[in-house]
Amino acid sequence: MAQAAEAKHETAILAGGCFWCLQHPFDHLNGVISTVVGYTGGHTKDPTYEETSAGNTGHYEAIKIIYDPSKVSFKEILEVFWKNIDPFDAKGQFCDKGDQYRAAIFYLTKGQQEMALASKKDMATVLGRDLVTEVVPATTFYEGEDYHQKYYIKNPLRYKFYRYNCGRDKRLQEIYKK
Image 1 (cartoon, rainbow, N blue to C red):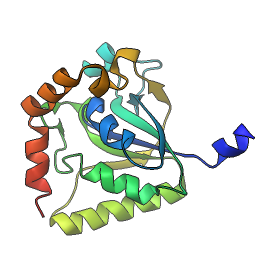
Image 2: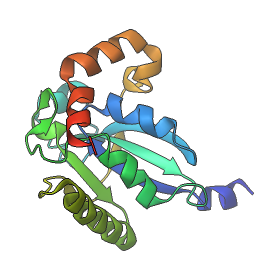
Image 3: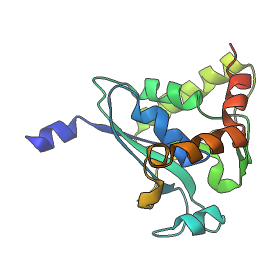
Image 4: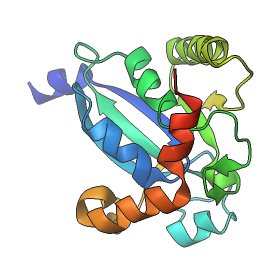
């Protein structure tokens, strides 16, 4: 019975800078079953935070989202994703710079690839310029260390301080002011 229920769940993998900041909006999205932050897209097996943040692994900081497609669609997940990243910054996100902080959509199926590309095109039209956010095939996802999981709950003051000092919310308001 549990396997049948799990078979109805789907997975999305997204990167948008500091993985702490992507977990919060998806944890509060109806239809999301679970989220986990970690690393993907690189060449190092079992990377650590220290290795990844130093830029030595080729991995992105990312989030894996397990969701119920009868309650939330991949398209809706992408809408939340766009509103939480700077799709114009090829060098990272907000105050975090480096390949490990770039924004990307990692597709697991041909359908996800098509939806991601269409969503990117639509968002470029809405925002009036080309986006640098990558749409790439998913690779192995490595779960991040426990202290990074649900960071916004474990360290709410430090999380809010980081978001503010990094200029994340201010920049998001500038991009999505419409």
